[in-house]
Length: 189
Length: 97
Image (cartoon, rainbow over all chains, first blue to last red; front, side, top):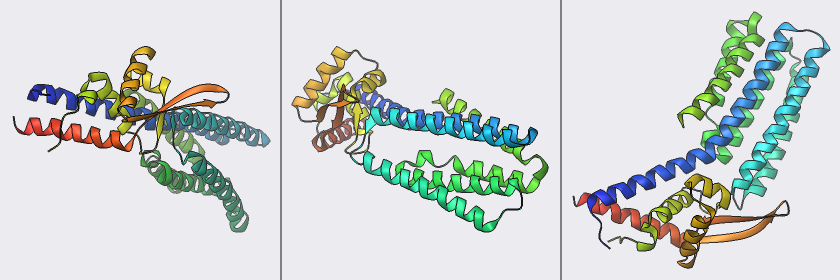
């Protein structure tokens, strides 16, 4: 079998294109949807926390958390149907246990630390969630991990620099930022 | 020296192998997902997969998920080696340019 350099070049380009397309399709369809859903939950939830008071805020967060978790499970199962790994079931169980333990540890830390106000509770929860994303990302794929860094930095900046507008900050910059990032990744790739 | 592989070099099969080798070793991809990724028809993809399976470059796993039949496809270790050798052969042609 003989090929000219131009034919070899076009074959290599076709391989490179397909490799990129596959990797992006697998990793980004999950991450963009996760980012978008988390962004919407944060935008609505924190905006409500900033402007509303009383038990209504807790109900809104409970509803949003339920919606976000359900959609997260649906995305996970959809991705699992597309690409299967022999270790998927083992990983899925371990990650589930990990998140459950993380929630229990977060509750224990909040109970022991007795935060002074809602902002401290929120900041602690955000930090625990981001730690969870980092840890899960390290196990599954690095592409799942990196976005937790700027979100953590944004949350800390808002907490220390603009405490009066912390919830609005988290909603618009944290949530809005995630939505914008998801749309950017979607349009770029 | 690495050699070109005639079975793999066919354009659709080249793209199939590129997609499958891009997965983590041991991972398998859904037939319908692969079809959409490659933008080919069911029949076309099925024919090329059979050729690759006969050569031992891919493994086809027919199973049931939620009581629905599903076909998963993965590159075998041999397929990965042959594909890598094919890439090296293509690169060596370019170096001789």
